[in-house]
Length: 374
Ligand code: PLP
Image (cartoon, rainbow, N blue to C red):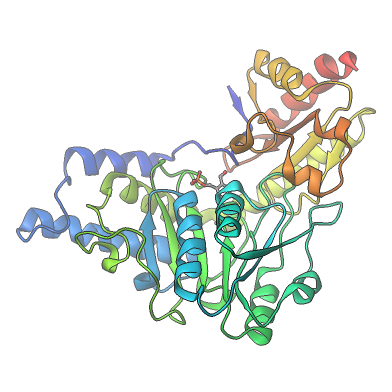
């Protein structure tokens, strides 16, 4: 199998698999228990939090584990609305967020909040100036993704966070960094965002783990789940140690090599772009400034046909975002991509496992088996 759908999920790395197995077979104690077996699990959980925090450039005591990126996103949005909703009812986000954000916004609109959706340009970029024009006195939350999961565009998060805090000192700035974590260098401590969402299974960790960074600027934040007081009282429930230890192992392994990894991925993506640009009938969508995401259209060949042809050649790519099955991509629509191009779009996404041979096989299959269908 040639796996080129790494923005949907990544192959768990050996370190993560070993950590998950260890937590299931050896270190399966309850971290809240008061005997040595439990205390040892609590110690490992602390180590895991330090590892994820180190990869994020965060203070360990400000990293709170969740079950996935979607949960972190929901917590950020609903928590802010709950905490600050009395002060103001205005929220700014973008028209090309993941549905983990957009559907929360729709729900909040139904509850009386007013949401401004910043529109991307043709490449999927959104400028800090566009945000500046949208900020208001009653803005309580700005939520902008770090990397768009279809266009591969990278938002100027540090600049946007700074601007938000300057013009709306009481507003909260959240970034969904699910596609940016270990792909775009950032340090949570200095980025300026108050809330940052990340996910384990996008960085070669297991599914079932994510985290929300809550900056020390936010002295208190509404808990996500009430109960026995785990995660500092923010997210109760016995910690899912297998997934969390796996997440930490993946973050630690990824953190060691990510600068070389992203340089390599960027080289492969540039090579892919150059090869595809040379093929008449292929259209590349979006900025693809991130090292790992490329949206490709072959107008005239429906997305599903291309996916089937690639699958027959053993190649996995996705129809835009895997999370938006059956709908015309809201991201490409917001970018003003033509309907014909949207209906033939698929996303290629790379990881540190991707090789030049994978890229060449993809290009060969497109040239030999898809383009003749136009
Ligand atoms: N945010 C973005 C930008 C994503 O790409 C995804 C997943 O594709 C998510 C959030 C959701 O993450 P998870 O699958 O961990 O819930």
